[in-house]
Image 1 (tube, rainbow, N blue to C red):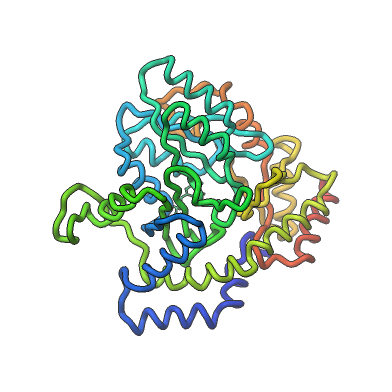
Image 2 (cartoon, protein in one colour):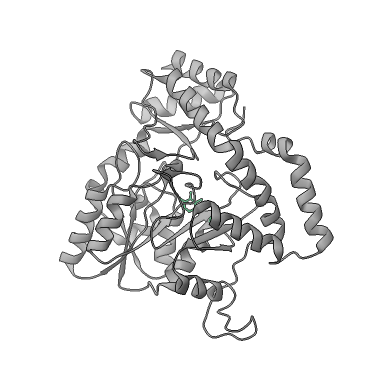
Length: 374
Ligand SMILES: *Cc1c(COP(=O)(O)O)cnc(C)c1O
C-alpha cells in the first residue's frame, strides 16, 4: 500500500499524459508558450479569479507576493504555528518577522480569536508593523476566511492564502485560491493537484498586483526580458509540467476530488469511536491533502505508527515540530505556552494513506489494523 499512489494515477491517465508530453517535445517549446498560458487560463477559471500566474514552486509563489507587497524589515506577518516550514520561511527570507498564531483544535487551521490577540499584542508592543496574515488551508481544508477577512479589514492587513494543500477545497462553493488579496498553491507531486516535478501558482483578482508579479518573476522585466526596471527573480513553471497539469486538472475535477471525499467518509465510518477522526465544518469542503487522525498522546501515536509499519501500512506525521520550536526561529524567543493546541497536535496527529485511487479494501485494511492495535 502506498501513502499517496502516484503510480496508480499515471497508469490510469498514461495515454493522455504521454500524448501531452509528446506534444511539448514535438513543439520544442519548453519554456512558456501555449501550454503554460492555457493552464493558467484553465486554473483561473476553475478557481474563479481573474489572474493565475504560474511560477517555480509554492514557496516562491509566496515570496513573490511578499516582494510585490514590499514586505520586509520591521513588518509583522501572522501565520499558523502548525504548518509546513515554508509558510514562515518566506516571511523571514524577506527580512520580515513571522508572528506565529495557535490553531483551532478541530480544524487544525489558524484560530481567528488567537489571530486577533496576536495582532493586538504586536500593536501594544510597538516594535513591528502588522502587515499581512497568511492563513493555511491545512490538509486540504480551507481556513476560516470569513472571520479572518473581517479581522484583516479591521486592522488593515493584507491576506495571502497559502493554498499549497488547499486546491479543490471550497466554502459554500467559493473555491480555495480565490480567498484573500492573493492566494498561492504548489504543484509538488504529493499535493492534491501535483505535477511531475516542481511548480506553483499565484491567484489574484488585483490587476495591478498581477502585472507586478509578471514582472518580478521574469527578472523585473519592463517591456521585455531585456528591459529590466526592478530587481526580480527567475521563477517559472515549464511547459512539460504545464502539459501534465492540464491532463491532471481534468481528472481532478472529473472524479479525484469526489474520490478522496469518498475515502474520507469510509475512514470516518470505519474509525468512528476508535480514534478522533477529521471534522469538516458545515459549508466547508476539503480536498484531503491528508487524512489525519488524533491519538491519545505521543507514546500511543509513535507505537501505532511503528506497528502499522510492521503490517506494511505507511503513515506520516505532519507536523512533528511546531514552527515556534524550529531552530531557524530560535532567536525570536517565542513563549511555548502561547501554542498549547499546536504543541498537543504535534504529539497526537497521524496521517493515514490517502489518495483518489485508494480502494475500499485498503481503507478496511488500515482501519482494521487500527481497531486491533488500539
Ligand atoms: C508544500 C507546501 C508549501 C511549499 O510548496 P513547494 O512547492 O514545495 O515550495 C508551502 N506551504 C504549505 C502549507 C505546503 O504544504
